[in-house]
Length: 232
Image 1 (cartoon, rainbow, N blue to C red):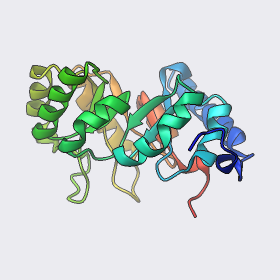
Image 2: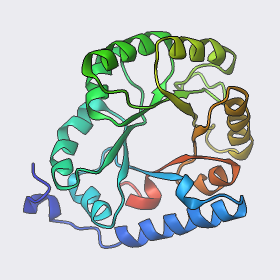
Image 3: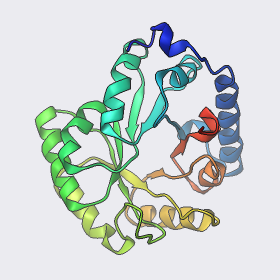
């Protein structure tokens, strides 16, 4: 479906530009508190499960970084959107199966969920084959939660060594703190771990806590609800 198809514009979200401006202003305020530049923080609009009609108003308002959870969903909607906005930067923020590594390398400009040896091997092979090397974030299970992806903190050093040996372009670390608790200590822990390993990138913070994440050093925040509105 083309982004110019009237069907994709049947229910335009007139509030999307205002929400985008509000989130960007919040990022700027948080960055100023931490004596950082707002330009050093990448806002990733989490467009998973959103149709083209919901994404287009944000694209039209100037947003260019978007995050998707699944390779197949992104393949279905982004090629057409990118025809109209070829400078879009697409981030894979969901769990990635090793057998989807090549498709992910072809489609995405950054991968935020590298969390195991088998995926490192698959991504390195795919990058060599395809000739693209999107930056990767190692996902850390910062709250040691069984139901969440990410490598254990104790396994990170070995995984980073494997990634570097495989010539994976490691940009930094990613984490999702436990729900329902203060996220700040988890963000601070991730920032310390990143510093200890000489990594600059920190993919952390979502709609409810991105300002806190920015004050603690986030370089990438993944924001969905605050941009697209509450899910129905």
